[in-house]
Picture 1: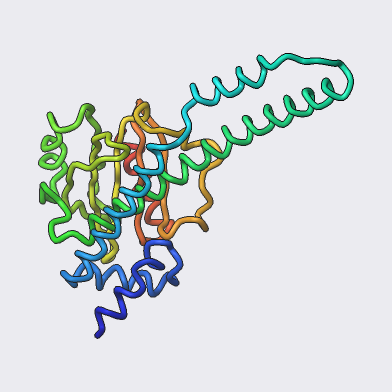
Picture 2 (picture 1 turned 180 degrees about the vertical axis):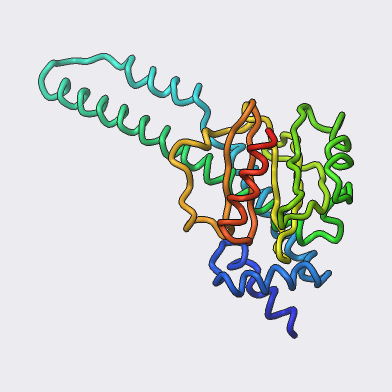
Length: 249
């Protein structure tokens, strides 16, 4: 009966509508309960499948151009009311195109952030969250060689409160990347690294508001790589770990 109560809240949990304290309790329960972990993973996979299906049927740039050409190629019979309507239609088309482009870019950013959050939750819910288990960066970093098409540096954690738990391969928009997991005061933090050019949106422009995210997160680009640091730890801890990575790179 206890698990049934948790499972009934899975949708609000993934939508970020659970209070912060309850979110932490939920995180701990999902990691310790095989049944709820399996359900959480199923929800994440279903969410990714729905997002992929939605992108599959998004009108292409070529389709928009063909429509614009068809509208522009229609003959104008008079310069009176017809010209006024044509001018108004042109203004609406331009505004609509600009608005669509802006919303599309913003939607692309929010989608990337949402998928990063899903990857973080799905991994922690897994019975084997890491493929290489080690607290030694000199063991974890070489493990990725030959598995992903880029190299990156891991920070030195001496004299810090962070502990490296290990790493695994992951995928964002069908692009391979690295997923590192760190621990700080019983909170798990995920660090994702991908090639910047493979991501579908410009993530530094008009960044998502922290209020829109269930977790604290920082993201930045350096040397052609895009970094994400995300977790339920405090914003100060997320910022500190991000600074360690920036210094290492």
